[in-house]
Amino acid sequence: MKLWAGRFQKETDTMVNDFNSSIPFDARLYREDIAGSVAHAEMLGRTGIIEPHEAEKIIKGLKAILADIEAGQVEFSPDNEDIHMNIEAELTGRIGDTGKRLHTARSRNDQVAVDFRLYVKEEIPRIVEMLLALERVLVKKAEENLDAVMPGYTHLQRAQPTTLAHYMMAYANMLKRDVTRLEDCAERMDECPLGAGALATSTYPVDRFQTAAALGFDKPTENSLDSVSDRDFAIEFLSACSILMMHLSRFSEELILWCSWEFQFVELDDAYSTGSSIMPQKKNPDVAELVRGKTGRVYGSLITLLTVMKGLPLAYNKDMQEDKEPVFDAIDTVEMCIPVFTAMLDTLTVRRDNMRKAASGGFINATDCADYLVKKGLPFREAYRIVGRLVHMCLKTGETLDTLPLKDFRSVSGLFDADVYQALELRTCVGGRRVYGGPAPGAVRVQIDHIKDFLKERGQ
Image (cartoon, rainbow, N blue to C red; front, side):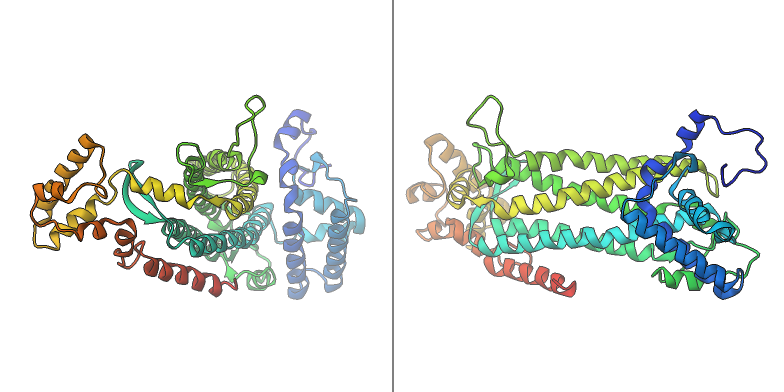
C-alpha cells in the first residue's frame, strides 16, 4: 500500500507507477535523506512533538538502514516511488508503528528540498578540489615555461608574441573565477529548507534552527513557500558548471590545435591519446575532444532545468522531479572531465623550438616595430602606416622584419637605425611587456604568485 493511500479507491496503474517513480535516479540521495530524517527525528524528540524514546528508536533504525544500504543489503522498490518513501517504508517495516511518526511535521516537499540541497552543497567542495589540482598543474607548466616564446593569436591569426607561461596563467585565472563562482554558489545555498512543510510550515512547534545546525547549514531558509518551490540554487550550480566546462572546452580546442602537425607546439603523452583503427600514424587527442564534446551535455543540463522551472506556479509541482537527473549528470560529467584533463595537461610535452619558430613568422613583432618609431617621436598612426609598408615589402621579397636589410628600413623612414633589430628580437618584444598582467617573465611571475596565494588560502 502507498504511504499516501487514503482517499484513493483504486491501485495506481502500473504504467503510471513506472512513470511516476524516481527511485532509479534519486536512490543516490539515500545518505542525505537519512541525514535529514535523523536531524528531523532528533528535533521531534527534543521539542516533545514525539516521545524522546520514539525519536531514539527512529534514529537507531535509520542508522541501521544506512549501514545496510552501504553494505548492499537493501533493495529499493519502484512501488514506493522515490528514495524518501523507500526509506520510510523500510524503517516502518523494521521498527513498526513508531516509524510512522517520523513524517510528523514534515512534507516530502521540504524533505526532497533539503536532500537535494545537501547533495549539491556536498559536491561543490569535491569539484573545487579538482579545480585546485588543475590550477597546481597550470602553475607548474607556467614556471617551467616563463621564457617559452610563442605566438599569441586573434582571429586565429598570429598577432603578438607571448609565452606559454602567459597562456597558462590566462586559463589559471579563468579557473580561479570558476572556483569562486562555485564557492559563492555554496554560500548562497547554505540555508536549510527542512521544516517548511508542504509550503506553509506546521502547527507543531518545530525548531528549524536546530535542524539547520544539525545538518551543517548556516541557517534556515527565510520563507517556507520559497523553500520548497524554487531550485535556483541548482540552476546557479549548473550555470557555474557550464562556465567551467566552457573554459575547459576552449582549452581543449587549443590543445587539439597545438598537437596537430600544423602546429606541433605540444605532444600528448601516449597514455592520454588514442590511435586509429586504419591509419597507423595517427595519435588522436580524444581526451581533449571528449571534454569539448561533453561541454554540450552540461549546457543541456542547465537548459533542461531552466526550462522545467520557467512556468511553474508556487509551490511544488511534479515537474520538479525532473530537477535531479540533469544535476546528477552534470556532476558526473564535470567530475569525470577535470581529473583526466588535469592528467593530460600534466603529462604533455612542450615543443618550445616549434613555438619559437612559429613566433618568428607572421610579423608578430610589427606592433613593436611601430612602437620603436613612436619612441623616436613619430605619432603612432604614422608609425603604423610605415610598418604596414614594410610588411608589404617583406611579403614581396620573402623577408621578415627580423631579416629585412637596414637599407630597406631606412628607405621607408630615416628614424630606423641598427638598434631596430634588437627591438624586434622576440625575447625583447616579450620582455618589454612588463605591464601588470603582461607576458614578460617578471609580470607572469606576479600572476603565478597570485595563483599560489589563492591555492594557499584554500590549503593547497
